[in-house]
Image (cartoon, protein in one colour):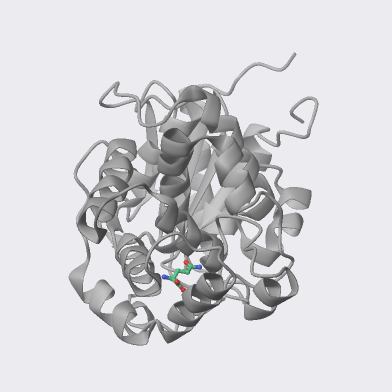
Amino acid sequence: MDSAPTLDAIRTATIEAHRAFQDLREGQNASYIPVLARVKPERFGLVVMTPDGQLAEAGDTRSEFAVESISKVFTLARVLDELGARTLRQKVGDNPTGESFSSVHALVVHDGRPLNPFVNAGAIATVSLVPAASAAERWEKIHATMSAFAGRPLPVMEEVYRSEAATNQHNRALAWLLDSAHTLYSDPMEATDVYTRQCSVGITTHDLAVMGATLAAGGINPLTRQRAVKAAHVPRILAEMTMNGLYDNTGTWQYEVGLPAKSGVGGGLLAVVPGRLAIAAFSPPLDRFGNSVRAQHAIRRLSDELGLNLFATASH
Ligand code: GLN
């Protein structure tokens, strides 16, 4: 058996992975959400956190960016806790679509079933499943769960929310398609609005590492020691991340890196090594799939360096 990397080794590897890619100039900020196009492309943070809260960090780790699609992980956690895995599987699904995260085609060819909670249609359906008497209550529950994972009350970036709400016609169309196929469970425009708000939550790379370390610790937040999700659901969340976390490039990611992960078009990327650690990276320029270029490089480098690939039998 190989031994786990020491904190010193993790700290050295984190600083080196950050240094190796900070001058990389590939990719482009998300341009379909106007406010995201204006975030400084040089921003780059990298944080590793263990389940007991030990920390390694490099770069821009304490300033906020929009969580975007990474929010889908925590709404999934909330729905699993409240309704159970069977309902989630029946109503949303647990398989890749093979298409881009906002594909209408994927929805149409599957009779309105979104297939998984990490494409936009599946995420809007997941929001609509949160049991609530009003949009405000639905939002409060989602916000409470995200904040429990982060260990602090997370802010909404109001400018991001306004920018997304003014330009989310495509997501509204997805919600109406779901509704017409009876695969949406609250008012379509209300579900889209709560979804848009959850995407506009501001997190730092440090917050994202705490959220990931909570998953790595089986659902207990390493800073607050509070449970954020039932332990039984953590493997299901990580399975969804393994299959669908980087959209239609997830297979390539697993082939090369071998870790459950979730990206957002704000530039965040979270990878989890169950029981061992979480890696959070943030940098705005994205590849054509919508995944942060520097974040992918940095996490891959750390995974190689520290022998983290879950499909490998021993580190090299
Ligand atoms: N708010 C974005 C959208 O709905 C999130 C997508 C993403 O991060 N991939 O398009």
